Image 1 (cartoon, rainbow, N blue to C red):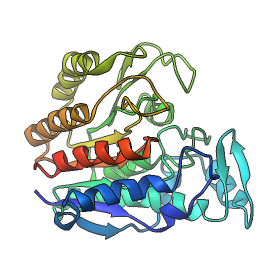
Image 2 (image 1 turned 180 degrees about the vertical axis):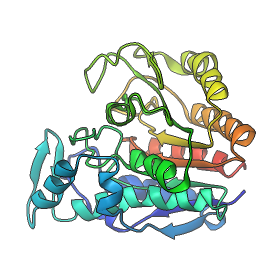
Image 3 (image 1 turned 90 degrees about the vertical axis):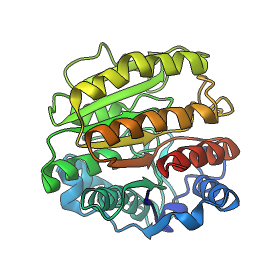
Image 4 (image 1 turned 135 degrees about the horizontal axis):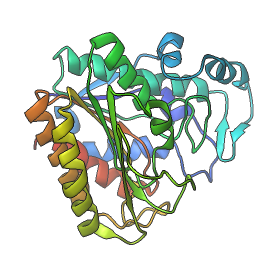
Length: 307
């Protein structure tokens, strides 16, 4: 099993402040854990290329994309939305983050890599069609999924989001899009403080109460997600891999452990092997306890590698 690890140094340079939870230390925590756990040498580490405006506007509103480019500050911080701040390196970081997912899709769809993990920031799943929010500027996984449909001709792309927060942005972009199944497990009620409503068409909601823990999480995945994926028969499985549902994370209360991230990754790999020759692209979203993030991401990546 050949797994790509795609990142870029610009993703470390985006810094919204020393006290901000979406910290540059996040990527270092993952990399350090992979090194100490002796996995990094077995990954194909690749440098991301930046997303083009054309790739961004295939997913986001043209005027919104233009506004992010125009508002990029040369110094200091600019608040785009509460707690979502731009600084001089943010635009480049966001371009490389989105571009990494496009790269991952190309590598996996051409068979050069079996699967890929995009170690990137800023995250993306809260960014809507025409709005930044929740630390997100461009919806990285949505940019990659749209590229898979338009460039590689896929008709069925599944996006599975196990971040503790509902990916409102990904849903906003793909609602009523028959080419994409978006399935999200998340703590509810919780940020983004909107009622996602009932599952419908190509959208599967799997809300969980605070404190639910492993049993409830694994039950909802087994009873709702896996049958939906089997019925959809994806040609590519994409994962919004948020690790803030971990029991040590300060941003959520779902109380999952590292073994839960291994478990769900193994289930998704099984689905991908049955339906799309194991093609999986995983994209980092949340995870804000640095130590827990490193451990959980390590388990997830180890499962991608089938080790």
